[in-house]
Image (cartoon, rainbow, N blue to C red; front, top):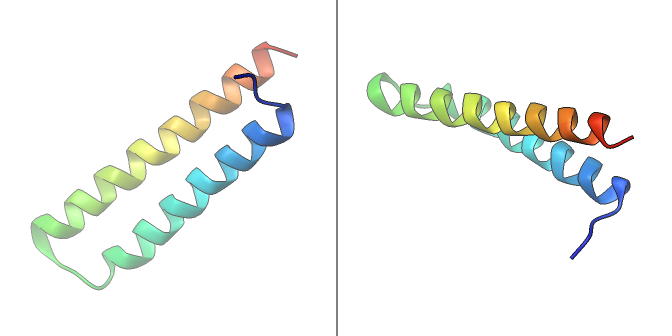
Length: 59
């Protein structure tokens, strides 16, 4: 299955939205739970960045 550039953009946008949601949720918890949410946020943003780099290299 091949995705169009617009589909990849939507995926990246959804990942960034998810990361923002994780960030906002982290304010409602403390300690190790907050750290886990931040780690997930970092991983989600890193994936979005990698997808953006891949999209740029295929142009």
